[in-house]
Image (cartoon, rainbow, N blue to C red; front, top):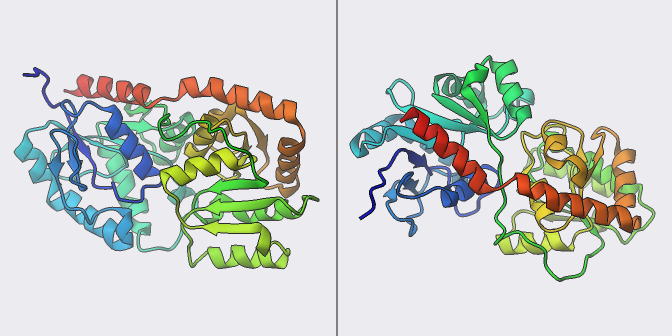
Length: 358
């Protein structure tokens, strides 16, 4: 019989069948944490020992309705569930927690992009009011980078004493080098939101003389933004050189990362930039924007460019293709960077904080 006692509940309400971004981070943190110490609130009724089953329609898989259901469930059902199970702390992989219920929470904040680049959506009030309140009332806040911690402190006035920066990680079972040939395309992973800066990456592609080079964009299409990106590709005569892929499995992503010439993450801001780490794990060079946490994460494992300058992005693309010694140097540096980022390190820091609060 184990003498370990549960110290916190992991809020798995965001977990869905097609995880991206926060969903991937949540899944990997769950796997790195001891299920006896941190049981999972599990919407998927998986095989994890000690899980507590919750509704399975609360994730982003269900769109805006899923978000609203999750928020209502968090405020109305979760406090009673926590009280009934007797676990003293809620660990949430995003800034969501019950308010006005006495629940002690540790939350992970990934970025403040909705405040930096506000969009008129049904969730705007969520970002403007609910998230800041959660961050101010949480016992501790985990930040995925120093850049995010500075922004949470500077933009929202959350005390530095409540903030802890934790490294994210990668799953070497899902992300590793494959013995396959590279193909003539660059890869972008992410949504089509304006801050992802995909329009300038498409522009950069038009500057390459080699017309065999393509740009493959993996991420959910958005009626607000995708049509204008496709129109830009059409105007530049690049429709046949651009591929739009809404979603891929872990196996498909592994293959794409191993086949592309480089990953391009030219965002105007990122709280971390997990795809950069995933590319390094596959021995793939990174072309990264000089913005947000990206230089902090990538360092010398990639070519750092001005995201506002399409010519600079194009020049980096040319260097990756033509300069093999540079390419090998970036790959080697990436392998070194991976030692800094592991989910076990993340879990260790989280467990230490939970023990401090218990």
